[in-house]
Image 1 (cartoon, helix red, strand yellow):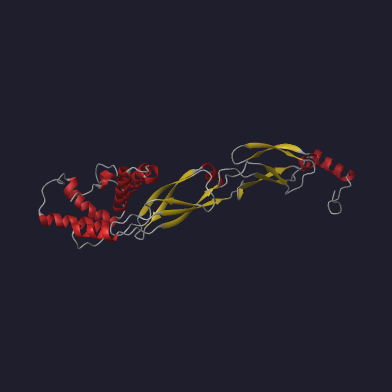
Image 2 (cartoon, rainbow, N blue to C red):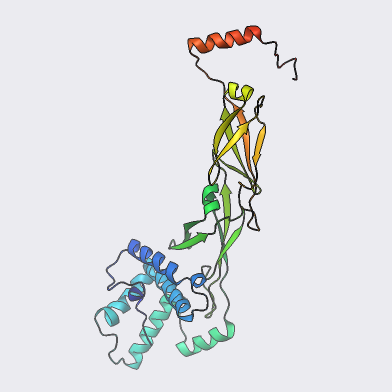
Amino acid sequence: MIIKDYYKILEFNSNKVNIQQIKTSYRELAKKYHPDKNIGNIRAEERFKDISEAYRILTDPSGRKKYDRIWNSYIGNKRAYRPLGKEETEEIDNTFFTILFGKNTETEATTNIKRKKNAIKGENIETEISISIEDAFNGVEKMVVLKSINGAERIVPVKVRRGVQNNERIKITGFGKEGQNGGNYGDLFIKINVEDNKIFKLEGANIITTAEITPWEAVLGAKINVNGIEELSTIHIPAGTQSKERIVIKQKGYINEIGGRGDLIIEIKIVVPKKLTNKETELFKELQSVSKFNPRTSRS
């Protein structure tokens, strides 16, 4: 039997590494050899499976302790290739398979035959992450941490495409639960929640934002700059604009399901100054004395 050198698989020269180093190396290698980035590359797929297997064993305290006993005896001490007796070989086989698959009372040949006949794909795992509208619009890479029942962690790099839709699910092949009898790992499904923030709110493919203006800009009209999701836009405020009125800029909103753009919808908010200079106070008093407008009785 060939004993896999899990430390070498994760590109370490010895087993004198801590859990954080193992996680860091795993993230980098999993990203490099992930099947989604190496479609049709059988070697990359096998490498990815070895990396995932190595990470699973070395991040489990009990599994690593058992594995290290074998590693120290037959790899670390450079005795991996010496001739082994039948009893010694069977003992190593049983120990190694116990580390990988739990209790093992059968020979490797018998186990392999059963695996081929009864291979069952592992269960899928479902989780969700929240990202900002800006990250969803531009695309972003996130790290998802999966925890097993025994507390071991798996860190999965997730590439969120530009224009991902709210509640869309991303499939990551091979990051679900382990299969049975040699079956493939299940898949990981990640639901994406696109979160609103203080600046932008998502309504379908439209983006809602707010523009604050002064009372005199509302009365007289004005040109102002407004930040969109991608760029700065100049808009015209018509004279007599009221609070909560909306101005629409076509095709400056979010990305829809077919790659087009929704609209940027700007809601107007008239802001009254809390402190006035003496001159400003005089002008408002003068306006009050000459104006016949009364919002409680007039609709014009």
